Image (cartoon, rainbow, N blue to C red):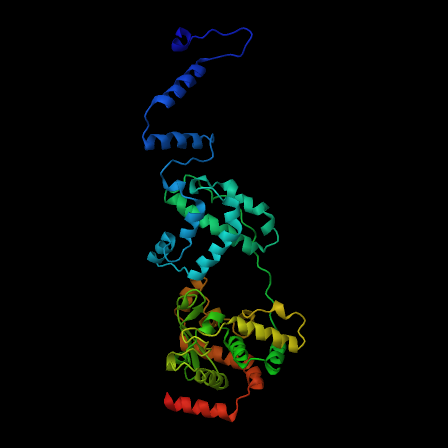
Length: 402
């Protein structure tokens, strides 16, 4: 005992060297067993071990770190009660319910099986990097994989910054190169053939024609109401979301786009067939429920059938959004000033471009766009136009009511 207390244990000539640190460790471990530590002191000890890379992570009892990871992530991406969503809104930043739902689906599909049984404080960078070796994601598109990674790194970063975990498990995660595959777009000649062939559904044909002529997004077309149809233009004020219903446009800003009388008349006829009696608040592309437009998925289904009718080799490679790409591409061929194009397309992605666009005379931009649209798209609309005398009478009656 004297050797231990005084720290002068003799060195064995035929054994390993025992120095004073051995005695210090014995004393240290004895103290750990006997001392009463506060939670703060326990955390400091564990943090020291983690800083020295002797442990990967630690979880203190009765702390937020103990929360099961599945429960934390479910709450995080719950649009109605998420503290993250609440913070975004308080800061005036945009976040939508369908975005949260999409990432929640990613979590349930890919992350819950990998992280089952773990708590928030246990998740490490190594756990996150597991996804890149998972067979279930090996053949997914890079953009999809990055979305899967974001579904976990965003909530874990928030947890780290708010003291819910001591692990920075989001920095240093190398995402995939997210170069998107080139979208297939029809030529103007193919568009002419599509709109001149027989369609099984006239409403779907009109929705596709409107996207072709204006470059509007699918949700913006679905959200159109009779009050949005002007004398020579469409007022794009809303978008339609499966999860949120009628909401603001993607950029949270309204815009206008001019249309020819032929297209306006077809839209008025379509709107006046709405059986729900909601007047100018009624959807142009109405559904069975007066509070919902028709399902936009049908527009793509009938587009694919029309493409098949004209002998297009692979109709499935064309999506509804391809009309927007066609519109932007062909309009940019005629208009070099991108600020003018953005007036119609509603793109708001580059800060400096937005800054200069604010000083552009909107009506002048719309007139410039109108000339380009009439030159590119109107011949096809005229070719495909097929309004009966009955339709004309409906239009005249509607105008008298207005």
